[in-house]
Length: 294
Image 1 (tube, rainbow, N blue to C red):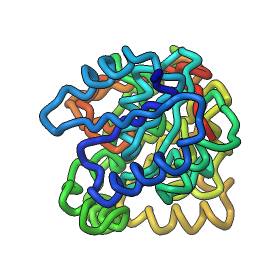
Image 2: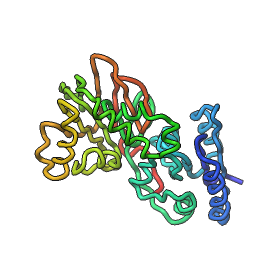
Image 3: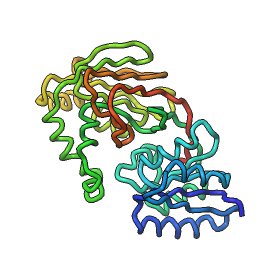
């Protein structure tokens, strides 16, 4: 039987989620014209290789089962194609699912894919030859991810980032960065640079900021320039109440092509919640690159 829906399950997905996925697929997709397949990726497998091998069955649609990192990896194999990509959230943050209103419950997410739904073409970011959907950054946001252990995330979920974030903010010092946005270069003494394709994290870090959409053909760049950690509470207070008063502290720009970040000394770069290397780094915009099931 041809495969209509291919579920790709990350190695980190819990056993109870795997069982719920199988039960939901068997009950909700049994009336489909074609069958479904569940491909569980082993921890010692090449994720990219396993996905490419699975796509040889030519499924009509692919579903990423895991967190935002898993989603980005599967999206990398489908970029600039028309094949729909579904999401069954099973990670720590699940920010893309939250942004698009996709149910966090496994059965409800499978029901969305099996039943009536809409397709939405969203933008992606290309960094070092890989595809990312959420955000990228250097400074505090990258340091928080770099210092938050996988065990802590497993035990405490999103709250694992909070203690690390507070500590990194208190320890933060400005970095001298050269940032070129669509070819226009400027120098900044920045404590944090967040490049967003999805607004979920940006709305928390920078309240009352610009409306960030995943389908507007651009990425949003927030450059935070603070002289000392004590400015952070003041920044958030002003940002919530009188956002126009923080122009000295935060610079907000948009990019439709590329963002390049350079520094005198290499600093950590994060993308979609994982450390992917160090500066220098180029983030390229891929408009309407992924066909998501919503």
